[in-house]
Figure 1 (cartoon, helix red, strand yellow):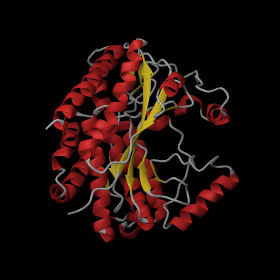
Figure 2: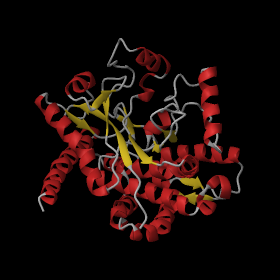
Figure 3: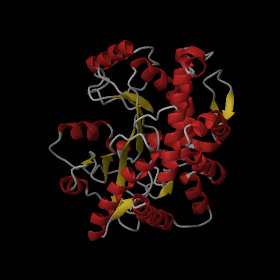
Length: 381
């Protein structure tokens, strides 16, 4: 039986009013809850889940901190906001969470509110270093697909932006050009050079769709971090996307000659790097409707068709690992559209943006508490 990998999440959230207005309280939250950390702008914050292999536990690990935060916010007539950008916010003003933090000085001076976004980072535990870099290559080549499934940021400052993921378009990729790495040694050398020439200010300052992660980067690595996803408020969809990612990585481990782009693609490494950038930009604009280029040969393929193709490819392994039902929410997104597409449709039909956000706020709260009841009932069996 194939073993599951450890999985963990970094969850960035916005706080605000029931009407969808962004209101920052991250310093207060960080003081109240040690498992929450403040971001440079006080309107959003982050929590990190403990590594877990079994999907049955992952949902509760994701939702329990949100329920605690929500209960605390309710006392202040505040809530958790959906979406990955300042949908009704003020993107002209950077609202510092810590005026004494020099790193926050750097962020505000160099990026401003471009980095004031909310997202989900998915981490998969991988012990073997060569396998980390093979998985890094495959996941980077398919990162646009995960962005398309998760897109939830079509608005900024109260208006549609023309992008399904405004977050990924505005977020400053750093460094601008990142090569494909053939080995850990090559990666370490490249990171050290970036730090030396000032392209990166620290080892975390690698803001790309996917990166290696570990307790002492870049020297000690033990996981893959997918950073491209917008905030996914539907935890069943988040688990589905995570399962698809895990199945792809395990499939790569089982068959590297077929699935490692560095070994298999007809494109050069430089062409692959450019292809990934082009695909990410296309997915940020049109998500599931985007025309992408396949990493195998550069041929055009519709994003939703590519995702369907991946679902078919991983189905035998999903059946073997007994996770096929987990993937169902992905098909639902392919049929009905992602969060951004549903929001934009409602907006085009005349539903005011504040009402769209209020409906999603209510859906978030209902899921959190109904999931708790189901979890407690399951635990009592």
